[in-house]
Image (tube, rainbow, N blue to C red; front, side, top):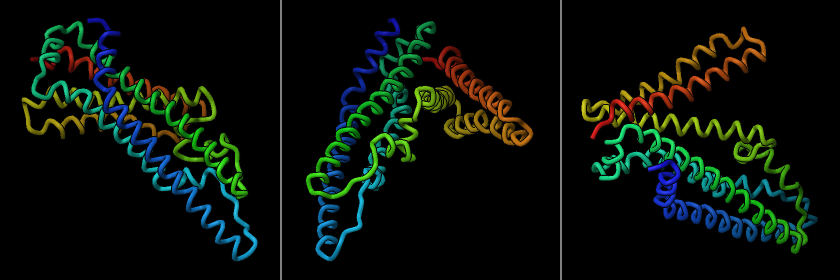
Length: 268
């Protein structure tokens, strides 16, 4: 079975829960937008009746609301949870498909690559749909308040750039976006390494989750502690170089751990 077929199979399996997640995200945000428009319009009318209103709205008032932040937080949490589940569902009950794949060691890294590619596609899809939804929400926001003659301030790009959460999702340059995607990939790789390590230990000890967490924690923690210990003695260029080496170590280390568990430790 080649890599593209595996990716297609993984995408097909995730389509329904992914569409449910996206639907919940969009419905929640537009419901919050509707309530925000109604409540702010009523507030502005109340202020207008009691005196001269000195009240200017921005789109940031809407995206800074708790429901909007929680909707994105829920989507991120769901992605992290699925990064675990994309492996655990195949190991659960020793499904026949996973058993067949584990009998072919040369195909095991295809499984790893397919699951990683699926997660990256899901993240990019979420970011794309959220961007489109934000654009539509901004159009609805400005159109409604303009029709009610309520002053609105701030351009869309400026507001997104100053919002902490959206700034991470949509940085100001293509290079920064690429860097953020690499960091997201690194988080997924750490989760993959944890799951595969835990699955290789679970038949030997009941402490498999704890041992796996400690191992991953050590892989993350020791380089960071070393970096923090020498950070003040480094120039800016040296700091970037050392941090880049740490990131490279994490990427290589997580992929190596995953490969080792898949090819040598896991068995049917």
